[in-house]
Image (cartoon, rainbow, N blue to C red; front, side):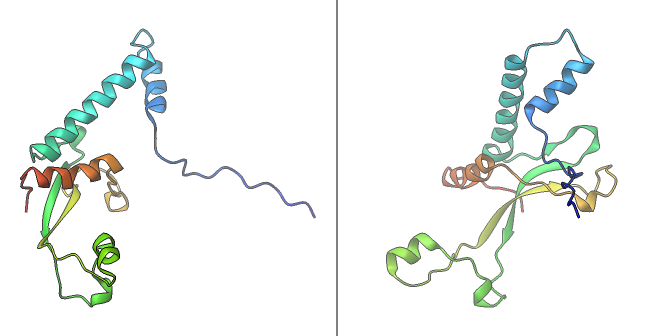
Length: 147
């Protein structure tokens, strides 16, 4: 009996700038070249990150896709200690487990309750590593986020 090779799956992963550029070239054949296109996309993403993180603004996404913001939540200590977040750096220095004791948690939020997307409960927003790392840096510069 011969085993057939597995076919390509339906989920292909995220779209890259190259994929978006291919779509752009199909619709606008006399448009800009790839380098200029990529530079425009990257610069606009940096400006959006700066507005959301450093200026603590809420960004309205086009086509009624919802809003993006960094939200501030009060940390709950009512859960069992094995679910508390461990501060591994301090734990390694002191030699025993040290838990985070900050009063607030900061998270990237996609406010999608007014978004017009079918099956929107199946989608989630995952911020990039750079975007996640910008939040603690902004906190050191005394930026306050939404509650």
